[in-house]
Amino acid sequence: MKNSIAARLQLRLVLIATLPFLALFLFVLFDVDGVFDDRYQDLGMTGIAYEIGDHVVLPFLVLLPPMVLAIPWAVRHALAPLGMTARRLDAVSGRDRGFRVEVDGLPTETAPFATAVNDLLRRLDESAERQEAFAADIAHELKTPLAILKLELDAYGDPLADKIKSDIRAMNRLIEQLLLIAQLDADAAARLAYDAVDLADVARDVVSRHAPLAIADGIGLELQVLSAPKVSGRREAIAAALRNLIENGLRVTPRDQQVTVIVGPGAELRVQDGGPGLTPARLDQVSQRLSRADNASFEGAGLGLAIVNKIMASHSGRLTTVPEARELKLVFVGAPEAAEA
Image (cartoon, rainbow, N blue to C red):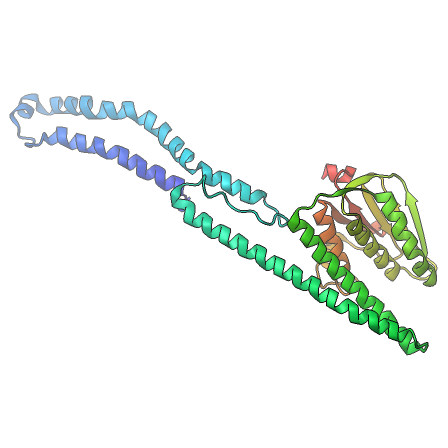
């Protein structure tokens, strides 16, 4: 409270309002010529008290309530633009690039501070854009030589070449993930409009693409469609989130067991696998960038669940876990669970 501008203003205004009454009190008491004035000698101490009461104390008491009410109101009114600006800043999310504080509506004294905040926001935007452009450029530069190398290795049929090609596919997968991150950030910066995405259609497409891989590993891959919800978002991003969960499930599921993809109920996608399951604390840990749920595959590279988290955040959804069902779940806006949260 000691650093409150409002409290300091109110205290100073009260002192300023009180000083004239104090001066008037002294003036009446001494009447400029002093207490030995003949009039005061005639009045006596009782008369002096009445004089002070009538001319100082009574007016002060009459004016005190309006002052007590008016001063806080005046202070709040003067500081209202600052409160409104603070609420606007608080409502800004990490996706809201280009936000600036409205300097015109602020008091003149706070304009330099608001300008400094705007300069900081501009520098942060420029830094984020440079990082996104760098990630996208690096990813594009890497994809071309890897594609050429893979074509050259296709001419060889020995096991070593097959192993190298497998590593190249994993590196391509990592590069695609980096590109996806850059694209998500670019979309957030541009505030692009989302499309209506059919979750069941996305699940069918992703499951069909991963079925050959699952069969080759001796793992079953099943799709169950309980509902056909539509959500607002980017189809390729939602497909990438589901793809990461399926690949994670295939990686942790033993041979001859099954990974099940479930659409619904409501606006959610669920992936049940044969792994040990993830507790909420463990999910939060492995969802951080550069953290991994296991060390079984280079392809994970610490980005899989971190990307899923980023995708869900960009869609105002979330990634959750149901450990007892060994299930990871993508919950979108509009799902019953999301509405209750």
